[in-house]
Image (tube, rainbow, N blue to C red; front, top):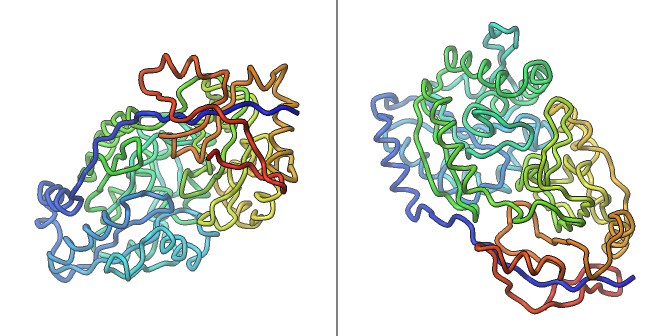
Length: 418
């Protein structure tokens, strides 16, 4: 078959960023009155999750330093539900891969899957929390605030979700995801979150909002009684800065890599326009006819949750799948659909040919094709010739290279343009 000619395009994204994370953290913790809340000698649990947050190491290290300055003893507690294979060792290993280890941040990582039940909400949701966190005098909830890949609401991915699902470990994640089938995520998270704040030593939240390049743009210390209100405000800021594909319709999307550090679903559902969630409405845009996934990131450790969102994967992806890890995460998240295995192509070339063969009456001249590294890296990507007229009219897009034919090596691997 004939392949389309492709050109590199850059997209201008929100670029405001924090240059000195240590200073901003110190200012925010002082503003929130942390010194009046924590006494010398107390033990302080600081949460750390499974997402690849660019400034996570610097943020957690700065918080640890401030806690030590108060004469308290900080520890890091993995807060990632069932991720890391739902094992203590797996969660500690995942944090280390993301730059959160005692050597990097100056506080021990205490990892176990043990939880204690702290109560039942008024709508009958049982709530559990990490035993390691509950054994401390204080708990600081640290997380990025952003749109969630599974639902839309007043709050989405942020402090409340980290507190309810992340610190709930495997059992808590199972409970909350299942009750969300009945009540929806927003009601379930808010209901469980209020109970945790009432009964656990939640002292403060530290929320981070990223710019379009994945860098810290806002860091805010939030008192527990204001979690919902402040999360909603920060979420609106995050929505505006989140990167997205610049057009609403594509025939084919090629994604180089998916991974848990990129998105909880491997790929951001709101970037690719596919949510595949039986208790949430489908997304209206963008509309992408066929999606090809070429690889999984090493940091995913074979967790393929999200492959069910695409139409074709390569043997490269299939060979890296850790089925038990993927299955645990999919079942825990009550989203087995996202673990379905798509058609497996032997090579990139065959995957692209499969996509063309099933994308409707398109040719190399008129196909609307986009090729991205991953759904979090949308400042630069490749588009086919048919999209260049629209690129020229878009104020945030700029063509960065001449058109080049899509090329493959002798093994059928896609070659990046020179």
